[in-house]
Length: 232
Ligand code: CTP
Ligand code: CA
Image (cartoon, rainbow, N blue to C red):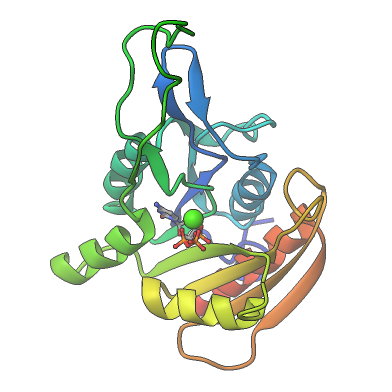
């Protein structure tokens, strides 16, 4: 049967998805990384492709393989992910920033392996801030007057004594200026690397967040359904 709006709601749409965790080199053999497995991003790529989209996956470090048949670009650092994402956004209808982008990178990258030395002090690592790619995507769309119809951010929040997760997510949505924000509640053993997850989808225009729990594939299908609905 020919795919139709019901079975393939993203037919003809170009969807860029970033996934995995960036790695920021300290020297040729060491990096600062994070616990992102890439599973949620890969599930999203699979769900978007199943919905008929032409998917481009920009993959930082992942514990899992990219889905068969999905065009994939591998990157290592936040700065590499930034160039790939800003470039791909120019030809996309939707950008989903599921990657765990390092907020900071070492200010300097040693050209040779850092050695222990008895005649010198132990090293102190100075960090500098990485650009906020999601904010830049929103800014690039605003400045150029064209670009993806939909920019989707993710938020991994643990909540703390100063605020609950939904509150933080709402503030993050405002700050970033994206259209949708997917909230993942994280904590020890929750979400990172796990197959099950709970997500809440917050809309820029307000309204009650929609919450889904289940496998990362089920959550991905729910997110992609929201994306398709939002595209209209
Ligand atoms: N993100 C990004 N560039 C960065 C950091 C984050 O594009 N340098 C994106 C992530 O891919 C995600 C969203 O921003 O879609 C939110 O990431 P998160 O780490 O939750 O937010 P931050 O603004 O970095 O705030 P926090 O201090 O809570 O980490
Ligand atoms: Ca962050």
